[in-house]
Length: 552
Image 1 (cartoon, rainbow, N blue to C red):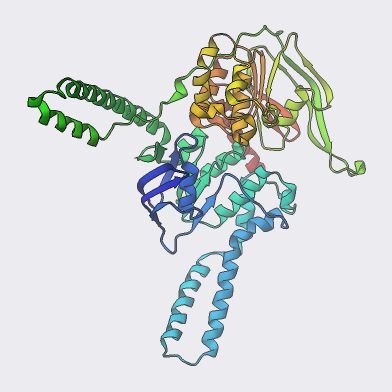
Image 2: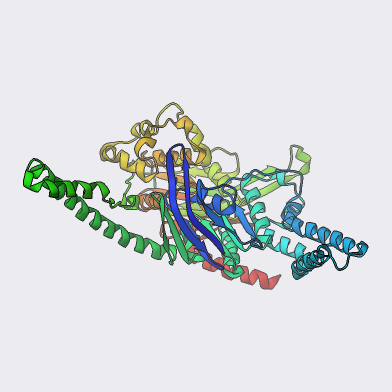
């Protein structure tokens, strides 16, 4: 369907990748993998036609509809949520208008035998066939179903898009793409702004739509659920595996072992050849052999070993003082916000009468749909928001807190290395460069000043800094949004090994699996406790959802 032939991308004297070729076939579901900076997003832009390669071609059939969701969107205001999502069908209105115009020409022209007249008949037939194949009578129902699946409520449909955060606008854009019924769907980090329920809905849509999909995602469970093929971008080339992500990891490990073996054998041969040249370069009888081996070395294609997988690196928290038995005790906690600046307009209740006790050493997940109060509860625990009821912190609690704004509190004038060097203590000081590499700040990257970092880079640095500070209660609000899969593994293993108490707000099921042993569900103005891991919780939720569906 889409053919990529010998493409290369070069900029500023650097080659991102070269001589890359592959095919995207109907119904292919492809995970595009590789470390940050390898060129995954650039590849997706080339497939979408929004960027041109330096060399090579991308061939897309004329009637193939390609839909592209970038990581960052430039959105326009002026429409309601429902109107904006309905823009997915704007092309049908244009098609209908074009059919009417051609029919009018056919009615008024008299050159029935001409080539032009026959061409108009052929064109209107083709357009009409496509137009009437789409059931326009149900488009409003499709818009509604898609918006609800992505987490919107019916009362949101008439709200202006300008009232929503960037994450919710991303969902509107995703709804528009899905409603266009594309042949190929290109998705760059689609789950970053989705809650668990919406991710499940998107998985189901992709699995049942029968469309070709190419996705970049750091959500391992999402990638494993929807994809059957993995294309890895690494060191300027690609490896194409007809395998799911988990199977690809095994195959990649085998490939790297083989590469390492070939590399070591070649290095041994090179050294032996150099020794021979050095020993006999002045010997007349060996001149021909020496020259032959010099030429052989010049023409030798060196074996390259792919970048080291740093996911095995273990990060250990520094020791901290022991907290009391109950680090957090909530009793009748409630929080409301005024609907507008005018107090007479009433208040929106986020949650009420929330009571729970968190014991020392427990690892807790706060889950629920966006806007149901997870981050609000975290801010109440941190003392950043006033609230109803009582929230007590236990004896000797030392909190480490990560929220998105933590990244803005870093010292702009320090380098990345200095930022970590300032907090690293004990034996971890010997591993600073390894840690920076694991968090994608290896080599010269570590000398950059904080002030030149992107939002995602600052977030990663803030997380790493927090992990090196002695704390016994760790509160993380969406920590994985800007981490690649390898870095996420390093973070997860560190949290599994952490002997303090953990509260994590996350929609990443794979990250939470095996990490948390209790789930607090936020929804319908309540906070409910589930004494289980994330997958047991999701199974329970599925049963509850079905029961609620029956009641409706």
